[in-house]
Length: 272
Image (tube, rainbow, N blue to C red):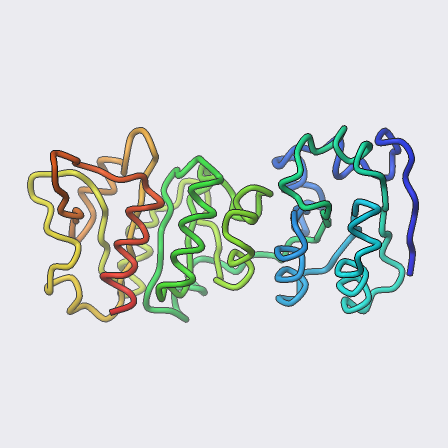
C-alpha cells in the first residue's frame, strides 16, 4: 500500500485537492474525461463499488487509524494508488470544514454516453435545465434514485452531479443512477420526443395540471423537466412540453424548492 505522510498542505502532490476548482477538475484529462473529488467514506465507497477508478486518496491520520478507509483502499485492488495521510490541522487548511469526515479521494470520470443512446435504454427520466445549486442537484439525485427514476439528463449550464457537494448530498447515489449531458446548443426537447418520451415541465402556469393527473400517468415513457432555481424553465421549453404540471398546495404557498418539488413529483409519477 502506497501510504504517504503529508506534513505541509502546500505539498504539490496534493494539487488536485488544493489548486483545482470543480471546473478545472472536470476538464483535467480532456478529451478523455476529467477528474472529480469525492468526500466522506460512504461516498468514496459507492464510487468504488460502481467501478470509478481512483487516482489518489487523502485521509486524516486519525481516520486512517480507525481502519475503514484502509479497508476501502485495500478493496479497490490498486495497490500503487497514493494514499496521502495528514493531521487534521493540515487538512483543515485545504478543506475548511469537517463535512468530509476526514476522507477525500480523486477519481477519473467515466466518458458519458450520448444522450440518444441513454434514452434508448430507459423509460423514466429526469431533465435538469440550468439547475445551478450543487446541493439541489444532489438532493434531486437522491430522490430520483429512491423513487424510481432511471436516468438523469443535464443541460451544460447545470451544476454537475459529480461536484463534491452534489455527490455528498446525494449520499453517493450519483454513481448508481446513469446520467449524461445534452450537447451544448442541442434541441433536447426534439431529442426527447424523437425517443418517444412524453415531456412534463414543472411550472406555475394557468394551464398547468396537477402532477398526479391520470392523463400524465397513462404514458409509458416520461421525461420530467426541472428548471433554474430563480427563473424556472425556459419559455421555449415550456412551449414544447406536452404537459405543464404543478403540485397543488395550501395556505397560499405557490411553490417548493426544486429539490422538494422533485421528490413529490417522482413519487407521483415514477414510484406509484
